[in-house]
Image 1 (cartoon, rainbow, N blue to C red):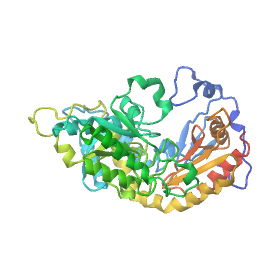
Image 2: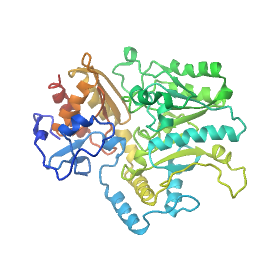
Image 3: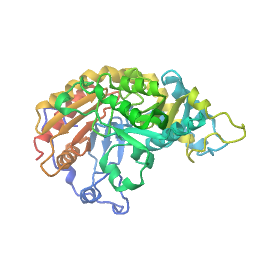
Image 4: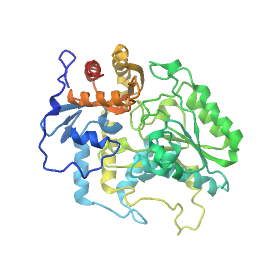
Length: 454
């Protein structure tokens, strides 16, 4: 990445690349495929905080993968663990048979979870973790003799993956519109907490907006608590552009759910494993949910994996039938995959050995100062941050929402900086072992880019 004193070398990534492969067959996820394939942005290798392109350019990764790779790319401890595991046990059937690594990782995950979480159900992604959590919530109430509790409360602008359950409780209109007629019927959405007219350019938690949690109480009145199974929220909404909970908001949700017997699910797929300066956001905010979903950082992004964490009360509600029968008819072929668990064990060891979560917490002020220094940069409409999560929201072009953000993304790549844009939100998820100088260089580069964006 270029230093703050050097001009940003825009345009050098536009060199024509020769490929030994055809770009056409791969239908890329969450990508403008036609535009990409006219001018592909390809990454061939990675190390530490950097990506490398096929033509040898070095790119600084300001998003640590996709909220995934807090320890840096190709961490030697994790690489070694994966290499050894795949040569020893590549796969073990997950139904009625298992392997030691799955039990070892489950124990280590619940050890760093908030008190009372003592069971771990493995899946393969955040999307699967959410759908699993929803099924657990509904089945739990049925097991307790409260089978009418089937309604789930989601939130506008929430992102809970792209399986049908996650889309149903999620509140991202673009994700939902093509599938609206096939989404789960018993879902209601809370208002989102983004109040730019009152909270623009807030550092950390905004002051205004805790009252929005009271809408859950209105839903209880309208639907009756006996029909509501759970409410699901991201403690900090990531994919919507880092929407930070107002002071007191999560506490209010917890109090309302407790009072009415509603399970509170925290989707910590992004916020788990150090992203907000603690093992989990529930620890950082001192608000304990009933169910936690995780993924991404559990293996440092090396092997796909996710998990759902619950306490003994929920787990044991399923354990009342004959011992020889399956208690919960759910799971995946690759639940607790041996290579994924090896990556997870190595990642958790690495987090502990380097004090990654405390290190992330110590970097928050430097990150906050660096990102908010862009307040006067061209097109900047808002800046939000919490932990090592941040978003620079650009004012959209008239009648072209998302075009300005996409131009900034492409020009950053050409300048040697990988950023994540969601429409006109430019989001940042720095490494847990970043340096303050990297923050300064990142946002100096973005400032230079924004001066060239139309």
